[in-house]
Length: 80
Image (cartoon, rainbow, N blue to C red; front, side):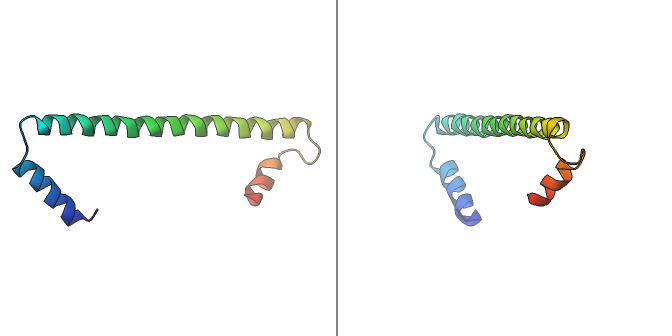
């Protein structure tokens, strides 16, 4: 939505709001913001778990895999 149209919408809400509408609008806005924040926390948790698994695989390969120790990370970084 264009910025001008949003400002018009806000002005319209303020001008012709029935009693209690602003309160409900504020509650809905708060709920949506909480959902967004929850989504961010969920994504962060998933990414943290993925990084932990990547690290475990790299360490396992370094310890038990063939090749030159210490080169797995640099080799992977070139591949990605």
